[in-house]
Every structure is written in structure tokens, then in C-alpha cells.
View (cartoon, rainbow over the protein chains, first blue to last red):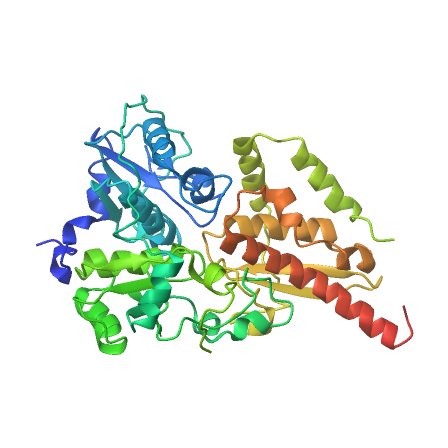
Length: 287
Length: 153
């Protein structure tokens, strides 16, 4: 049994180890995708063969606040040489924060041949493995995607309002200072993009990075995750859960943990998050 | 008086000459290689929290040091080894603002970061980098206010 299999996850095959990736660098059915919080990091070196998918440039509509549509997703997949049988393995900096975000967006288009490299960049480099600056190039594919499906794993404002009114379970994955609203009023602090501070009433606060081991960025075993999300935050696997943060990136990490590692079937990411809720007129806010 | 400090302007003009994103990224990575951490005579770990840049995911810290000529030198630490953008900006701020007239430093806008990194920054990244600029300009404003209060400015 591998280390990942021994951790008790419901879907352990959604994670691959750095060892596994090192053994599949020349596998044509695998496409490594690096997604980072720091926009310069990929340029300093990346795993051989890995393409970069940048959240702002590659996954967002350039004009309105929304993700790319089917045409844009098809163009992206064709450009990075992915077809319907390619397994995409995401990894990145900051505990795979943006990697899980890209993973989540790919799921909106049903590309379920997708995995996360446990530990991300930090684990790869701590293992002493090589990075390269050589830009990979792949023949374009004829990838065809379905229309984006926002129903199952994405939540919108009105749905969240209904969810809150019916006392549905919610996790606010921001820092305690953001959750309490105190940060919005700190002097010399950059604008957080919201007019009001606080959280959605009823949401529990579980900062997203609690799900990982800080030393190497790997996910904590299921027992530890259950202690956090079920012991402290009182979630149950049958719950309908909405997760949110500021724009939905950090909460995609928690969505990944609850959905894939703990096997929850009804978790939605509210990507409008606090930059929407904190600017809405008349919605309830708790401090 | 407030114009962009001369050395900072030179860096911005250099960046303007490189509109290609890939080449600009390489230039910024090269700049990050010139990063030198805050000297031990200024600060040692654990760094005091009041010098931490709020909202910076790269765990950047900023210090200012008064020079004999009355200007400020700026010093930085970036605790996240993957914080290349923060290191790059630290070099630009240090080389561009250390020793510059305080009025000019105080007037540097936060959106300098978009001139440096382009508009395609995530919100969180923007906030962290703006926080670095803000701490530098705040140090200049604070010293100017002290001098005004003492009748020196």
C-alpha cells in the first residue's frame, strides 16, 4: 500500500505522489499542468514537460466576471495538447492552492481524468528533484468539451442566500481576521475588494491551509481531516455544503478536500465569495 | 516636487521596453536574483510582526533606515522561498526608492505593481504586492509627518 493509499481517503486515486510523477515524465497520456499563486515562478523552472495554466489569463473570461466558456476551454485544452483521454496532473506553489482551483474549473467542463500531485512544487523541490526552464510544446489536439456545467459544484449568490436562510452548512476558509471582519478596518491595509467585513451568518471558519502539512505541502491523513471538518466544524458527509473565501480560489482547495479526500457528495464552491457578498446590498452579515 | 523617483523611473522605462510577457517575466526573474535580505544589524529572525506586509502570501517584511542625508534606505525579507514576485518587487523598491526624496517616495502609487507586473495579477497577489509598496510609502509619510511636527520639514 502506498503512502497516499494508507491515509484513508475515500478517493485516494485523485492524488499522485512526486515519485509517481517522476516515473511518468515521458508518458504521452499524462499532461502535467503547473498553476501558481506567483506569476513568475513557472519561469524560474518547472517539472520537465509541464505546461503553465494561469488563472487570470487562461481560466477567466477577459471581460465579465466568470470563467471561460466552452470555446475558451476547448482552445485551452487544444493549446496544451490535452485530448479526452489525457490525464491532467495539476501541481503548484502555496500548498497546491491554485492547482486545486484549476482542477475545480476543469471539473466544470467534466474533464474527470484529473489528479493533484500531493505536496506540489514545494514537495518536488524538497525531494531534490530537477526543474527545467525548457518550454514544452505539444501538437494541438481536437479537444471537444461540453457546455460548462455550473449546477453541481458551483454556487451562485441567490443559491447561497437560500442556503443560508435554510441554515445549510457553510465553511468560510479565510483567515480568522478576514472571517471576523477586523482586517477590513486595519490602517494602511490594501483594499480587500469589499465594502463590508465579516462572514455569512452560520458559516464555520476553517482556514483552508489547515488541510495540509506545512512542512511539505502534502495533505493530512483522513483521520486528521475528519477531526477538523467533522470534529470541529461539525460537518457530516451527507451534508449539502457551500465553501467560500474571497474570490473562490482558497475555497476550491477545501472543496477538493471535502469532495475527493473525504468523499462528500454535495459540496459547492461559491466563487462570488466575499468580494460579492461583502458588496451586496441588504444581505445578512455576521461579525 | 513629487515625480517618480529617478531610479524607479529608469526601471519602469526599462520594463516598458519589454512588452512581451515571457521576456518581461524573465527580466523580473533576473531582477529577483539581485535580492539581498535585510542585514542582521537591522533585524534578525523571528522578525517583528509590525514589519510584516499585511496580506502578502510570500510573507514579506519591510524595514526603513534613516540615512545621514535624511533620506531612507529600505530593507526587505521574503520568507516564502517561492515568493519570486515579492523578491523582484523588493529589488525594484530598494534600488528605486532608497535614498530618494521622501516626498517622492511618499507619493509612489500602489498601482505601481501593474506597471511592473502587468494587469493580469490575481487579486490576492495584487494585495500582497500593493502592501509592500504601501509599507514603503507609509514609512516616508511617517518620517515627513514627524519632521513637520518638529518644524524640520
